[in-house]
Amino acid sequence: MAGYIEDRWLKKRPNTQTGKRERTNLWGKGQRYRVKGIPGVQDRSFGTSEDAKQWLASAKTDTIRGEFVDPRAGEITLGEYIESHWWPSRTDEPSTAAPMHSRVWNHIIPLMGDLPLRDIDASALRTFKAELLSRVEGSTAEVTWVHLVTIFNAALDDKRLLKNPCTAHRTVKPPKRTQRKAKAWRRSTVSAVRAQLPDREGFAMDLGLGLGLRQGEAFGLAEADFDFVGETVHVRRQLRWDVKGRPYFCLPKGGKERDVPLSPALAHRSREFFARFPPAECTLPWRNPEPPATTLEARQRKPVTVRLILLTSRGNRIHFKAWNDRVWKPALVAAGVIEVVGQKVLHQGGRERRTPVFESSREDMFHVLRHTYASVQLEAGESIVSVAQWLGHSSAKITLDTYAHFMPGAGRRGIAAMDSWLDQERGAESP
Image (cartoon, rainbow, N blue to C red):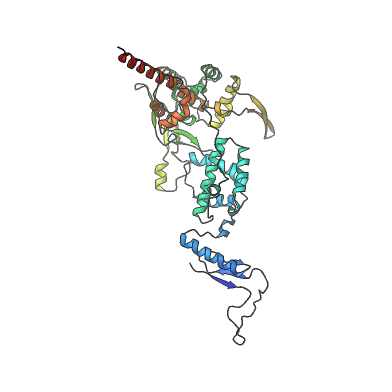
């Protein structure tokens, strides 16, 4: 690594007559000693020659180790780095990019975006964590922190940071989600909510409850996915929307299809529903709604046409947020599950529109039907491995960790079996 120290106050060569170096026009102005000649690094000035020598020596040592970082590269603010360097280089699928973008732009940038990268220390991170936990749940805070760690790792690779501040300080601990048991509805709650839903919308609830589907999987289900002879439903896709509000199809969460047993009762309801509300064709891009820029992207995003079974009253595909706000939450209120806590007033075209503000209750959203499905299966004694496959979990451990409390008789059955075994052994030992 090249590099040398220049005295800005004295000329480089001595006077030929006096043999002394003469003063420059910068004499007494600014810092005297400047380190120059380091490839790719701006010159850096110091007040004393000793400071300049130490910095140059340290820079050379770090370069040999592959650890040299010019401090001025870290002058860029966190927000500018995210918007100009980190985010444009991401290649995530829209289903991943949308929630990531929301967390970064709603929490990381507002809380720390104005800080230069090099100034983000343990104190700044502790403050960020406290403010983050004051505005979001622990689960969201945990994922947001993971994004922050990823951003700093990228800055580390880009030679803008020497260390990742999230992992370099002992006093900085990542936020952890509150461990809550998955909630399942009782039969009475299911019946009360179902009674408040029109038949068209109520069938979505039947699918979530009877097949353990995620909401996007239910809205992406097609007529051809029902195998009434084999008593199986093929879960092949989900309907998603990107950050620009554009719909598209993609594989279910985890990137794999699965088959779920179709009960006779749900099969009967499905046939009746198809007869009353005929499915309609829907053509959407696959994986990504962005127009393809290459031949490969054109193949990967080739539109898929299926006959969707869940549609709006106008025969259109369903937007999850509109469905939640206009169908699901009002039904929860009518069933006494949640309450209306306020009113939002919107002014559009000279008209005033009032919409209800509902009590926040994430545990009572569509996903609770999936938890209820799991609870019914496990309480009935179904294999944890089978339930994991039907839910589309990557391993039975995930299912067990999430739903172990839905197996109240599992431990007692093992105790009873061992008790019986010991009784038999004792009987065999008796004379």
